Each structure stands twice: as structure tokens, then as C-alpha cells.
Image (cartoon, rainbow, N blue to C red):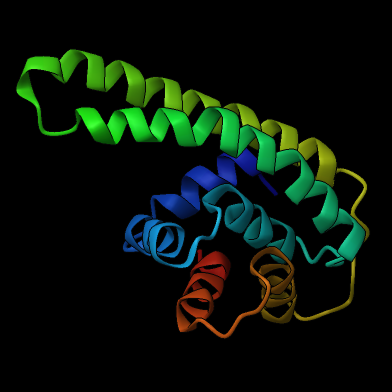
Length: 150
């Protein structure tokens, strides 16, 4: 199985996934990198341990709040202004670099996750539940289906 960054790039690039993930981020307050991690772990049929998810959230929260969200805020503030198009692209590249870096951090934290005999879809949903607090949002089920495609 591919590493987390490769898998995340693949899943994010699937039809409709960018929109779905960004909607879950902007409308439901979910973290895209953690959702991608949940799908990756579930696809590998790793155990959805509460301790692992506490560690993932603890590692992601400060990086998201101190690095990714400020870059995103600046990028969105620059969007649509042709006078600063080059700066917009530079900030966007920094935001993406910060996200790719964090995927490597999250993957390292997942290295010791134990396998499980759970069905892949059940495993993905279990990780999404740990990641997002529940799987009541139907969009998470759409994400789980996409995570197992291909």
C-alpha cells in the first residue's frame, strides 16, 4: 500500500473528493488531513484505537492552528485580486507544502497501528468515527466508499 501522502494525493484527486473534503472542512469543521489519514488507515485495515486518534489530533491541532489555518486565511484574503496573483500562488504553495509535511508527521504516528480482521468499509468508517466524532454525516459514507475504490 502506498504511503499516506501518495494515498492522500490519489484520494483527493478522485472525482468529487476535493469538493466533498472541503465542504466537510468548511461546513462541518472537520480536518482534511485527518480524514485522509482515517481513510488510509481504514483501507489498510488498521485498528481504530482511541489512543492513536488522541495522538493524531494532538499532533495536528497545533500545526493546523499555527501554520495551516493562518496560511489558508491569507490565501483566501488574496483570492480574486489580480494585482496580487503571484503572491496568492506563493501563499498557496506554502499552504500545500505545510499540508504535505504534516502528512509525513501523521504517517509516522500511524506506524505502529495494529491490523484488524474488520471488513475494509467497517474499518474506514471506524477511523472516520474516531476522526470526526461520528459518521452521522452522510458525506462521510460517500468518502468511505471513495476511499475503497480503485
